[in-house]
Length: 107
Image (cartoon, rainbow, N blue to C red; front, side, top):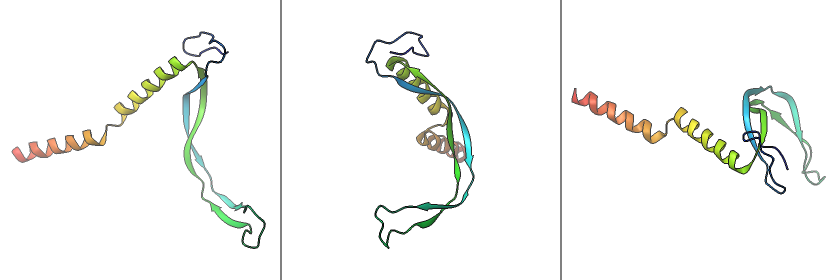
């Protein structure tokens, strides 16, 4: 049993708890000098080999809340719609390009 963050209702026992990410942040990881990987067996072939750790960048979860299955599905749908409106589909971008080319040709 847990309390849903969105509808504030206590869920019945044996209800699946869904984690919904509320906030994320960009994170840049610095490179390390040397990172060693280990082999499974200890043969002469499976010696420790130095592998460079180049670091990188990614996204870290800052805040995550519990939600009931219904509210989690609603939040997932909201995020999907936001992503679609923020980044137009490649087909839509191609259609806009062809429309501008057609208007330029007609001019």
